[in-house]
Image (cartoon, rainbow, N blue to C red; front, side, top):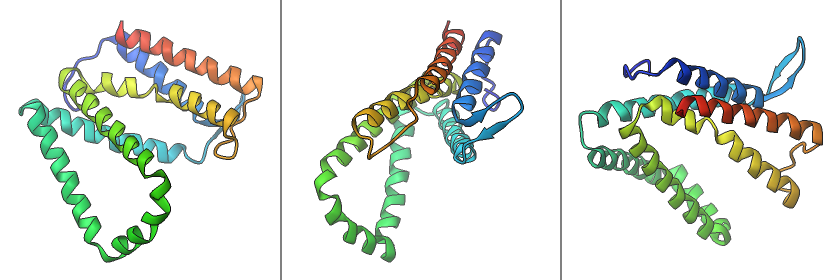
Length: 190
């Protein structure tokens, strides 16, 4: 919204602050009266989100002057060129050949996951071509709700893969944060 001059209403900005604040709290390890202890991954999450937002802003600025499918095709052609360079790099090629055997049992799941990822990217990019990037990005800011659900499922049914703290006090705190995120979404999209 800053770089593309796309207007947001004050209530949408208020909702954005709620969502971002709730996500920040959810990414914290300990919050007490005078102690704030962020998780070690928080800085990496902020860097990743910033880089991702930069790509979305670039996509939106180009899609304003070109047709959606043309821009989308060029984006994937660029990714394909990058993959070709990686595949022909000797170290990566050797490592790939060595590891492909160990991936054989799960290759179907990897292909399915990549297919869903590409489909999600298409929907996201199309949404960006229709509405301000900030609104699409804010909806992506609610992903911690999905991650909480996946984390709980994995903790209950597959504790060897992921073991989250699922005590009632922690769960109640996280659900409260999720409620604030949904509350923020109400302001953004109402």
